[in-house]
Image (cartoon, rainbow, N blue to C red; front, side, top):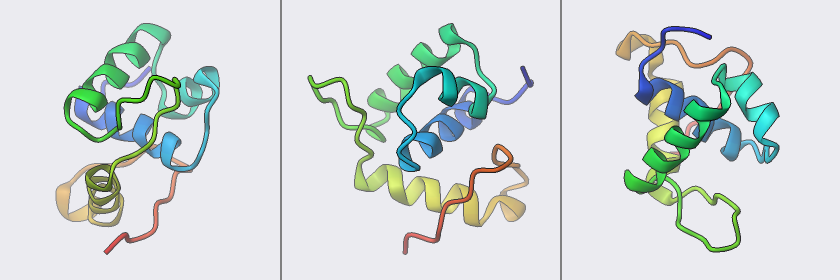
Amino acid sequence: MTDRSHFQKSLDVLSCFYLDIKEEQEICHRADVDDQTYVKVVDSLHEWELLEDEWTGENAITERGKRVLSYYHNYSTALKVTPAPGIVIEDYY
């Protein structure tokens, strides 16, 4: 596991939801997080209103979440961050 910030890990998990990856183990592998971190990250994404709260268990990304992801991925060089490898998000604007 890497030493990425909680926010960066959260955005990498959110990127997986955006790409319609639903399996927790696959998300953990792609975002390089363990099971406990995954639960904390998903809670944070709901708290930050980047994921909709749904009783169905599915994690739908909010419009705000799509804009944040787009900015994170498309301006990562300017932000001096590196999104998880292999995850590419198109510009949402």
